[in-house]
Length: 141
Image 1: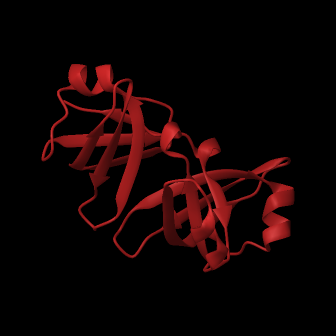
Image 2: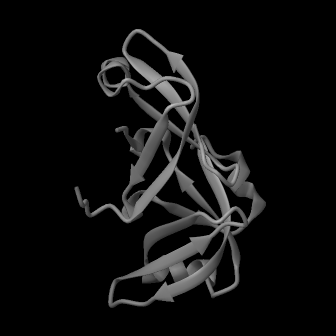
């Protein structure tokens, strides 16, 4: 199946914290980054997720916030992925910003042109991609 979400990261379920309604899923990537998702407990069961099983984390580029300073570590969003800007595609209103991490992940963000200017984003900048755990969908085989 093909989907329109730009960010599709594979990994292995490293931890599951079950609650009565929602569960927290931690997926470890091959490069050592961790992606945290909050999904329903029913979804965990229907997907057959267990520690050690393969998982696919999916999130839209519009769900990614960008920050340049280390202050990004002081936000409530569970996913803070540090990377380097490798590409910027400008548009009339929005732009696409592509980050690469040292571990080999690629994360795409869509931000406004005004936000790009306010952050003075340029190729080679070190930035954080910030994604709320509730914005991460999880898939399994």
